[in-house]
Length: 469
Image 1 (cartoon, rainbow, N blue to C red):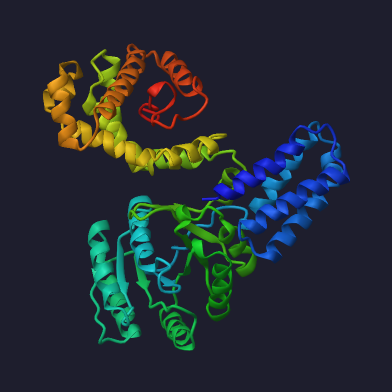
Image 2 (spheres, rainbow, N blue to C red):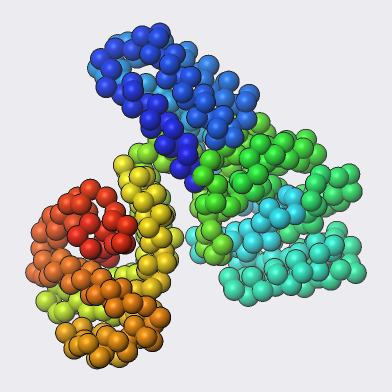
């Protein structure tokens, strides 16, 4: 998300970063570029106007002229105004009500409401330790009820059955009664969507809202529909007392205009970002971290939180103990590392959160690193347990058998073995606690080649090791 905007803004702001002093002229030129970048990113025009006016007002004042580094101060102003546009801080769900807390989900058909219900249930169970019941009041699309039932089973949430013959209000009230009986903390109600805003949809959801008195009324919106997203959000906000927004398909939107516009237009905070199809692909929305990401400054805090949630700590400790005792880092260990990286959204998602690595993240995407990881895993899966433990056993005939079994080429296997050797060398430096040596090794691997070769892999043919093991 935000790749196009990041590129344009980085290019525009680079021109002023090194300036010893800022004048009305060079501020004017940069702001013109910033304005164009925001409009191209599909940010709503009123938002762009207000943003540029606010930055100009602060930039031409004493705040910049008295700064030690005016250029950097200007970038800081842009960053703080981006934060202000999106809301100053992450706004959490209000669950401090008598249980069960009802969360009402609203939005158009195709925005990802049903998937977001499951993602939110998973999030509340894992992060907030809540018992969650989910229910579908979408009687117009029977597949929606089945879809939610399947997803509820996947995330381990209680599912309340409903059918197309029932009235939405009767379904929702029966689900809340069941939640009380089963002592659920939260009830998430999935409502019907339409392809466009209509009177019937609005009356139905207004009736549900009046009867259920939800703790949260969340508007689910597709980030990829740009300006339309903002107009739809405004229409729902006029009809319902929304408490927040879930922005879905954010990983597929390179522009990011909706994220910058929704808060300004509706006055309601974005509470979550949907960043993929998996049921754990839901992130709390932190305006300060997103602003940092937009300006190519990375988002280390989110990366750390993600690692804590998604990395298997037991496996991590096992690997550290193994390596510190001087035991060999084998292909089973490499396979586990690849799986852990995939759990964290793959290489591109991780690099995007590292400061100054936005361009490398784009290179990783272009080099199709996700597919390369899958290919590497397929190669390892085609080996015998003995071959995984000791790659030195791999002679010509064994290699032919493995590549035929995994549908890959000999050069893919040789590249994997080369990458494994580099990782094994680095892991060896950890023996006896030599972490500092290992970090120097990482620096050499990632810094030596100045980019990502088209053939795949990192400079020198290596991969980043166990992601903070």
